[in-house]
Length: 437
Image (tube, rainbow, N blue to C red):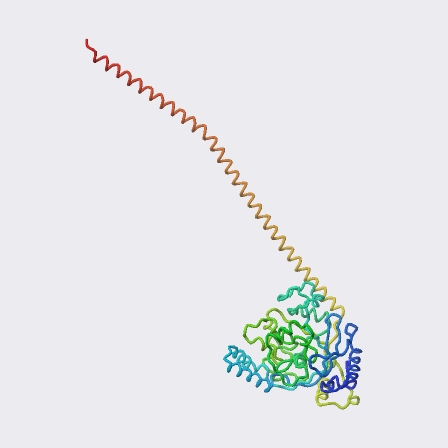
């Protein structure tokens, strides 16, 4: 990996800022020589109002990466930033605006961003954007983002298993929390947001989401910091007491740290969503309810042992970096090709398993439908049989009923005839009795 002796400007952002573009070009070529064939140097660019140009590299599968020179910064929420928040709250209260409670919520969480502490990080390459759905499909062919579906350019929201597959596939890593905050600040000293202290409004957020001309990138070339919930390598601690001061991830147990997420809940509902865009704001990964986004990193300075005789004169930050690097060697290892293949095979197997489960469900559904249809057919057949039997019984009963009715009518007619004859006989007898003798 890189020697401080080869380019002290790479290990101190103040030296990088004061260097000429010719010198930055030389340093970028030096970095390019250390990279694999899947990452190539693109050139120098300037973003926003930055005075110093940024060396841009292109990773074959991840996209554009910015070279972030190492250096020191004050990590956490500074007294100056707190004062800016309190002043904004006072203005909101004086204007009788309803959202002053948003500031109260933010101020209640300051303890999680304290104590303010000095951290010195080695140089690194960091993706200018979080991984998109389209790029994630290379390692996750069945991916459907829970928020954006199959929209290729949308940020991917991933679960832990998916993130592991991407890390193994790219050979890159997650940023340490210190690296991400350092890159987000872009060299600005104790400022609330990547662009300064001006609080974001609808116009700000919409310009960042549209990103039509690249003007919303910060001075280190990062786009969209604060918009999406970016996962860090650090485990969560609810303060910074005992945190590493060399830019390394802070190990622990349980949940990881997440930074950002304001864009996922836009349009904002007045619940303090803009707080998520602050450079110092931090949360647990539980806040990433739809999955975490990732901004990948290629480390440059953390794997090197230094020879004391080769060290040039350095700033205090450069000496701090060297001391930290001498104190420990990185335990990072290259991902074996066999392991990558195993992960890919496992992912493919998982996809096939899901497919077979889906087919089984469809088959079961068809079986249930077929069984239901069969039951209906049996019921209909039984109903038809019952109707037929009833009809037959009715047909058999009808002749008997008709015969009985006929006999009844005949009997009735005979009775009536007999009665008529008897009446006639009585009448004749009566007449005969009345005649004179």
